[in-house]
Image (tube, rainbow, N blue to C red; front, side):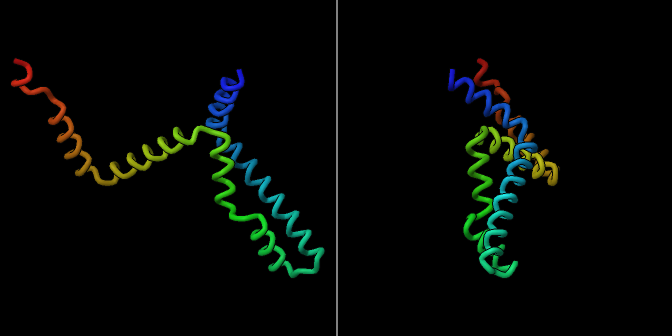
Length: 116
């Protein structure tokens, strides 16, 4: 039951990615703002307070990626990213795409010697 619920939550979170990413951004911003305020109370300048808060929090992108990995279907997400990239690349160079499709089509077409 627990695995099934976890799987359903992963699928649900995959389709709610924009909402969850916005929530994550807001939560990270709130944590950084609290750390900045703590640093300002310690007597740091605003620039130094922000810098120290970011250092203490760690990298923003690694934290976002770790959260995304934990909540969703990373393999499906990576597959979709690769498909989008492939379609964009192939649509830019239509001549190459046509030649590649023709070569693949001729290679997969059955030949007469195999039919006999």
